[in-house]
Image 1: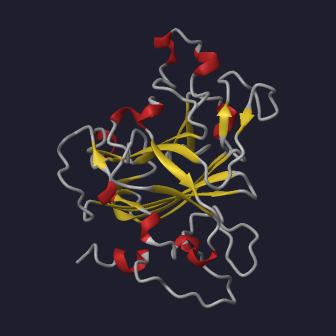
Image 2: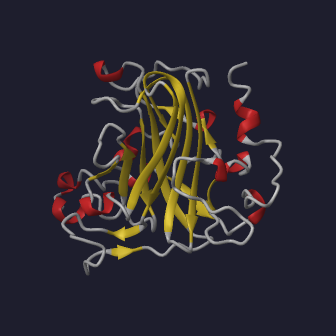
Length: 284
């Protein structure tokens, strides 16, 4: 839990007249007008593993992360704009990624990955009530990784990754533009075979609901030679990767047209606290 901060999932535009749809294509332009109150940045994250990073330093790692959802698609969306002074994206054994855990109905208890330690059947319960995703850009076949849960839910159309990188993607400085999407599940037995399996329960999202989200930004400055140098979490709990109680509460917001970018025929003002203006100060 994070009593010091309120977290929210913004409702994204899909099929709204005069407003540009959010599209999963690695182009973050549709998100640019969202006010900073809905962002999670490097300044909101807590390093919980190495103890070597000190305070967040945007010249080393700068983050803007926003979560979204849509009642039209019943999908959850994630965007990340990440400046990294040393990024290792597509080489094997790199650790530059974001690990995301979600619990849409708060049914996951303290253990949702290491279920065997609780004498529960992993084929039934591992990753069933809460899910754990991360992007693996080094995988040419599927850049999404779903840990533990039924493998079919970790591929398109149920989840996916689109991204772009400006800079040297392996060992240099640059900016990652990342978009991901997830299907909300209340129960997805590990042994299930598809979305039509009678044991699978899809959650129908609605405005005003509160769900659990935990994530860790992993920063790898050594490439394949080492491990991550920083493990930056939104909850302050390292064990979010298998402990549902390590997530923080996010409220699903109703639609607010004013925070989105208008269509190509609509001139849209840039907010004073827009990412473009704030990002320009990182290099100063």
